[in-house]
Amino acid sequence: MQFEDSDLFIARTMKVTRDQLWKAWSDPKILAEWWCPKPWTVRDVNMELRPGGASQMVMCGPNGEEMPQNGCIVYVKEKECIVFTDCMEKHWRPTGSSFMTAIITMKDCADGVEYSAIIKHKSEEDKKKHEEMGFHPGWGKVFEQLEEIARGL
Image (cartoon, rainbow, N blue to C red; front, side, top):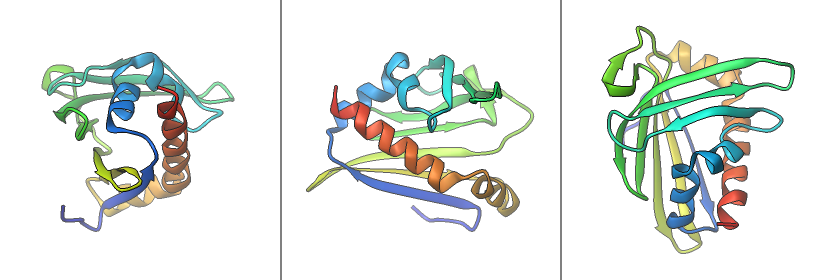
């Protein structure tokens, strides 16, 4: 995949199977355990892993912060790829605003699964904002949480 100046990328080799990762993605109760870096939590998870399906939840911060995450699943290839965006909601309804589109991939490798995320932003300014929000440490922590949860599945 070709990267642009407004993209962020993170990848890890996880010592799990794609079946375990898929289960962590496809069960809303399990997804809620790893989705955001602790001490943040999520509630009201609605993740419909099909094109046009919902990608919705509320991220809750330790000081009472609430960040609704409303989006749409764009593409799914089971146990291989999930693409979601916030520029649309369920059933392809435009939101009127957008921040990012995420492309998640899972590929078998010698040590487990190469798990990656490409985050596409509409501008370099939005990319910088995401970096300043703590993209790399935050998504890195989420990757660690996901791997830990997936190992137990």
